[in-house]
Image 1 (cartoon, rainbow, N blue to C red):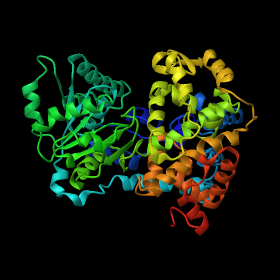
Image 2: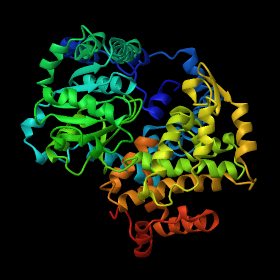
Image 3: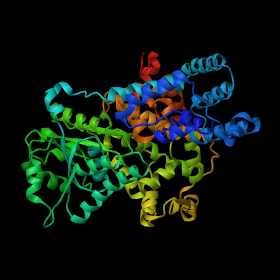
Amino acid sequence: LTEALPMILQGKEVRADKAKKLGLVDAVCDPASLESLAIKKAAELAEKPMKPKAKSWMRWVTEDVSFGRDFVFKKATESVEKLTGGKYPAAYEIINAVKGGLGAEPSVAFQQEAEAFVRLAKTPESSALIGLFDGITASKKNRYANATTPGALKNLENVAVLGAGLMGAGVAQVSAEKGLNVVLKDVSAGGLAKGLDYVAGNLDKKVKRRRLAAYDRNTTVSRVSGYHDEAGGGADAFKRKAQQLDVVIEAVFEDLDLKHKVFAGVAPLVKDDCVLATNTSAIPIGNVAAGVPNPERVLGMHYFSPVPQMQLLEIIPHAGTDPAAMAKAFAVGIKQGKFCIEVADVPGFYVNRCLAPMMAEVGPLFRDGVTPEQLDKAIKSMGMPVGPVTLLDEVGADVGLHVQHTMLADGSMGGRMAGADPGMLQTMVDKGWLGRKTGKGFFVYKGKKKTPNAEAVDFVSKEIKKADLGLSDEEIQDRYLSRFVNEAVTCLQEQIIKTPVDGDLGAVFGTGFLPFTGGPFRMVDQVGAQAYVDKLSRLADAHGDHFAPCQLLKDHAANGTKFYPN
């Protein structure tokens, strides 16, 4: 029971040798011996039935003794509550089904499971997660496949990553793991070494955890060829490699002149149809393309950090991007195992454009008396993976400040960035409270432990707070999340994203937006557009026009329509 519950509740996998020890399988063998062993076992069973495996004393206590069994289910329920916050009803139904089926007649146990399945199939969480799964499946198909020949995409196997920092090394890793040949290039030998060590180190961890064979680790590492710009960096070899490249992805610092310089160095070396992709998160793709020969092959491929863990990839064309280049970019992203969405070339693209107004609400909430600890707790209890205070510390106050300035300067945002407080973030930057990377932000970091930064808490209380409105968790959650949802719908209205499916995938896999809702668009469908418009209108009356519902949301409310009609 103690081994079965984690497998059932979490989908936890066990290795073959442990499966045999647990009694899940009767024998383990080399693939070449499978047929002969199967015949041998079948003959043995025909002559003599296999005896049930004797229970250990621990298994006897946890399965056959009532207090032991109750303790296991109690701990399982507590674990589920901690991990899911009660947002996923299937986990509780699983526990009840196992509890009811343990020791029962098979027919009774199967009936209980069938009834639980029917109940779950009718829940909004079920519909939302199935919709999310359908979106993931759709994202694995290249929407630009008809823009080029099938052979061009099938034979796409050589990519370059320029810049071996954490982002570039992460892109190199996920590419090599999926069978692509990778050229990883950095300006310095030291930078390249760190990038290669990052890739090898991540793969070594998988080998240590027995999730990857040493042979496969070595094969993956061998697919990454490293070069640098210093003496002895393999300039001639890089030139030869460049002639074979299908896609080049730059991952250097956010500096337009630097990106132009990087592309200027590689553009004459590659084929005319080689895609030149920038991993910028803030610079307009059109501005990057303006300084590059054959700008029609330039586009954005915005990965999220850490690249090996984050599954979303925003692919951004500029006005003149060739559809054939988009086809190659989608092919690479899909091969890397990413969920690819197309986003228009606007500041913040999609995910950061939605995050910015939501994070802008942090300042007003502080001003209205919400403490950093209270804010994080309220948002996490809603089902978000991290609270906004923790998110700021992870991203860095300097990065958050840069994003705020970028979005405040974007005239197309109208007044939707109202409430943003660059002054608060500037003070944190000036004090060196950048977050985890400097060891101090809203929290103080020592190793893996973090504790509230008393100075930052005092700063919010004395310098930012203007009143104490005694806001409830629900009021905090509504003010924070509704700004994201409204901006997401605005992005669809302005064709920054093509479909609600892209919007939901981007929100869930780019920010961790409440997966059990299926994303902001499915959430609005579930709640009802009119109900959401009413909520935003109440918030606008109380706190300002930046909460006013966008026109598309009001249209759906007026017409009684949904983003997903079927």
